[in-house]
Length: 64
Image (cartoon, rainbow, N blue to C red; front, side, top):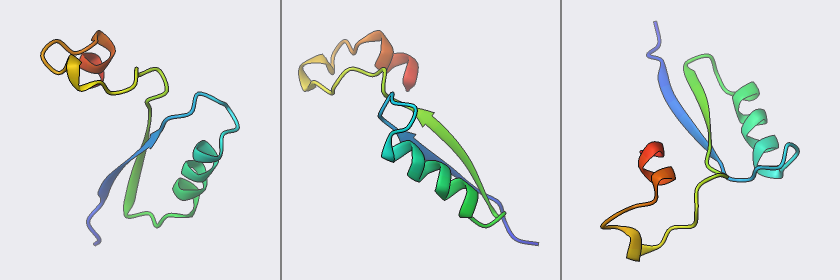
């Protein structure tokens, strides 16, 4: 029996029909059964700012 691997796919665009979302969906549909996918939405996260490393925005803390 094959080992099941967990794979996270990050989708950064909030658009319902973004190319990234379409590619993620195609990847999930075409992948072998041994891969278990989870699509993670990151469109709500603010852009990374190194100045915020000491006290990161709440959205980043919740995401982590």
